[in-house]
Image: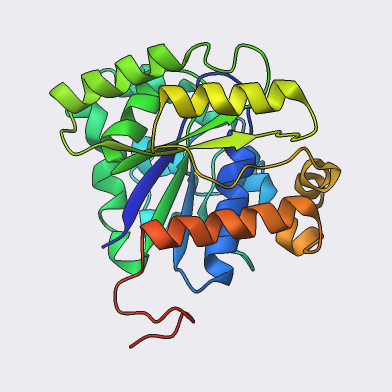
Length: 263
């Protein structure tokens, strides 16, 4: 059964989708079976894997609201499996309000395919509302990208309060997987100070691998590729490869050797 991880931060532009897409692709390179669920109406994770988000059908919206088969919504890409999203998902929050067990619809949907994967990564919308609540109810853990800029911790208290509420009322098992430092530049005092501050506030929860500012990371989505496929020798590709190794050290795949072979 897959472990489900939600990538969440209500601040935009912190590297949430970039981290979801690139960690997924690197995990697959290292032998994991991965499904990415795009749950952001912007559909950036969808296009980041080269899937046409305008033409995509069925999307996660069609599965949740229109009763489409989740199996039919899975798109096979060269990098990992994806359930796409597009702007039709923007209206789902309103449509979900009147439904029974509305907070658990995504969880119940993903349960039907969870046996096919080692990890399910959910790219959440940059807000704390009903769509994100569905993600948190579906997730075993939460991954929080944190930009190495001023106000890095701004809004994190609101996110942590939401996670605590979800844990207390809706999903007792949810926990923080870790925080990823993004847009890191070790040459600047600012990045060093932000990293120190985040580690002080979240001891033991910050991944050792920091993601650097890297032009290849910015260029890759426009080519519909994760950075390891776009430029595998870039600093961004190497960083996400190391992050995947660190993640797998914490979350070894049952029944597989270190080389990724099935026992």
